[in-house]
Length: 339
Image (tube, rainbow, N blue to C red; front, side, top):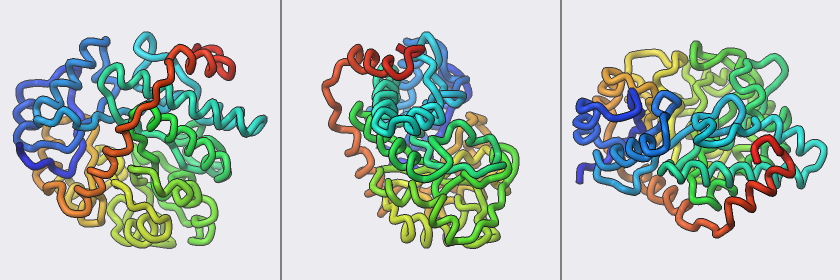
C-alpha cells in the first residue's frame, strides 16, 4: 500500500471520475471530505464514500463533512433533519445550563447516527470561536455564545456526543476566528487585539478542550503574535500558541486551501502549511488542477504527525449502544421541529 500523504481532498461531483480515481490511487490522500455538491441520495453517498476508500486501499480512511446545524449542514432532509445552529443551543443554555449542554450532546449524537449511515466518520464540529460585536457573520449564529463559558460547555458536550457515536470531532477554528472582520472565503482578516485579550477570550475554549483529537486552523492574522502570516502558515502561531500556550497536541489540519484568504499558488500553499507545523493540508473544492498542485508539494504522513493521526483514530473506536429513537425523542423535548 502506498504511504498516505499529509492531505485531505474533496472531489468534483457525486461519483469519482476516472481521472480522480487514478489521481487518488497515485497520490494517496490520508482522508477525504464531502460537500453539498457531492450529496445526492443514500446509495449514491455510500457508493462515493466506499469508492474513495477503495482508491487508497484503506477501509478505515476518514471521510469528513461539515455537519453543524443551521446554515452549515451538508446533509439535508430527507437524508438528515434540519438541525438548529449552535446559537440556538447557546440560547437554551442561557436559560438552563444543564438543558443546553444536554441538547448539544444529543444533537451531536444524532449527527453521528446520521453520518455513519452513509459511511462518514468525521464531523468538523464543534465550532469553538467566540465572536465579538461587529465581527464578520461568517461565524455568527454558528457560535454557541459570545463569551467563552457557553462555548466551552457546549463544545465539550458536542464533541463527546460525536465520539459516543463513533464519529471524530474537529474543533475549529484554532486559535480563534471570532474577531475576524472579514470572511476568509474571500479575503484575509487581520486581528489587532492584544495577546492578553486573545488569551482571555479567544484561546480559552481551545485551551479547555485541548485534549480533543483534532483541530482545524484559522486563516486569520493575529498581529500581536505574527503580523506577517495567518495562523495556518505561521510557525510562530502553531508552535508558541497552538502547541504551547493552548497545549493542543492532537492532529492539526489547515482550513480549506481553496479559500481566498491564503495567497500564493497551490503548491506554495501546501508547502507553507506543512512547513509551519500543520499535520494535514485540506483542499475542499474538488478542482482537479488545484488538487494536483497541493499533491505536488505534500509530503508523506510520518513521524509525530503520523503518531497524532493514529492516536486520533482511537477516539472513535468505542460507540455506545443507545437507541436512535430514544435520542431523537429526547432531543424533541428541546427542539421538536427535528424530532
